[in-house]
Image 1 (tube, rainbow, N blue to C red):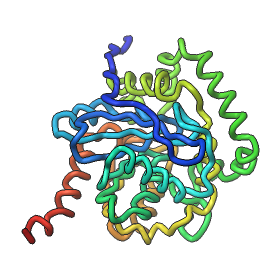
Image 2 (image 1 turned 60 degrees about the horizontal axis):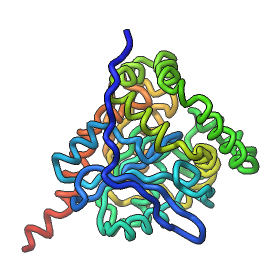
Image 3 (image 1 turned 120 degrees about the vertical axis):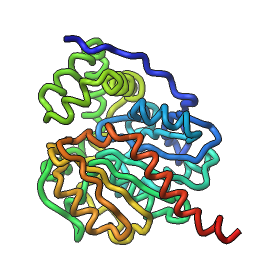
Length: 312
């Protein structure tokens, strides 16, 4: 049976921010323009519109400013490879400053996870809470753990470091060619995925979100996944144990991309983290509980502000 497709509303605001000499990052805003800001960092691959429709609707109802950010080499962002994961935090700081955001929560799916932790580490005075959904773990250095697709990524990272931009250019051209076939391609990925992801991708609102992100957010260029792999395979530039911000980590126990034990390993290293087990869910499982994720980070924000309120 063909799944029912639904329309996806355009972001309230979409544009780019200058983050350095000749460099820009794309962003898309949903929800309230004046509410508490939650930055949502996309997976690998992905782009600024990779935010579940349920999260967008909740942000609208709760008056939350929900902001998706393109990493370099995707969508409207300028191609660039960071020296390490930590370098992204300075770009996010500039984006936040430009958009008038002082304090924030940060959420990261999969490849967005390392950048979420980097931002929490670098800006503990501004990031009040962080959430990671099936996030990538280090493969080198004292915090490393073996296994998963990133083990293969570490092997190909030297090749990608030399040829990532041309490969990304070729992939961008390929996306333009397959654009008319994007919907059946997502259906095929769902059929080849574990049951949890297959269930999620069968839901029309999630398929619509992925199509919108692929055909609009990612449409100009797609070098970012290769830049991500290169940077993930290096030392991240900070120790996981030095992230002092409260972190909540959601992970499916049938994740075929990032092993479940990687999530447990990371939460053991993080000093202020709690693990949220998603039974029977796979790599995209965190997207299916996006309302829970948003309400959780907002509750952590409330808890952080409680002593100040009591002092008054």
